Image 1 (cartoon, rainbow, N blue to C red):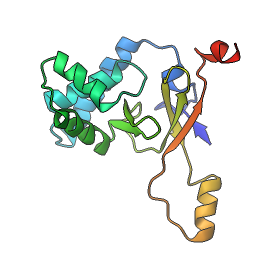
Image 2 (cartoon, rainbow, N blue to C red; image 1 turned 90 degrees about the vertical axis):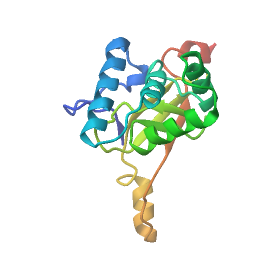
Image 3 (cartoon, one colour; image 1 turned 135 degrees about the vertical axis):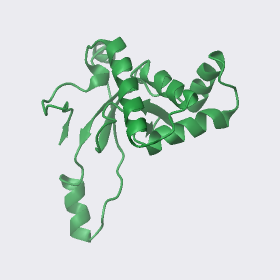
Image 4 (cartoon, one colour; image 1 turned 135 degrees about the horizontal axis):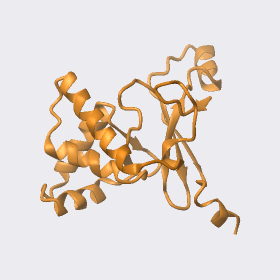
Length: 171
């Protein structure tokens, strides 16, 4: 089962496809990341913050070199390790996710809690929406239990057409 629950447990459309105040979305996410890093004594350096901010600008996955270009434009340097180290930190600490299909990254929409995300990727515009997934409770979990396999990590990525592109897909 895949849902997108907010902190109050209500279900709604995945954030990447929902209409919302994006300015508030970005500022709230940055504030939550800063608070979490402070609480866990993680170094949220200016370059890490900037990479997260870049990822938050759009609900699309960005490749490391696109991020590096934006970092360079903002005066953070132009060497690939700058972007990769920041991305490694963000992914390792649950502030971002890697979208395997696109070899790109997206900001996490639920950074304050442990979860198993699922990603819906528009094949026409590459928009990505994150939602909740429970693979251990579904068919995959049943198959794992039946074979004695213990799932440690899953990556759920679905390709399709987002609401903004649905008319283009039918044309």
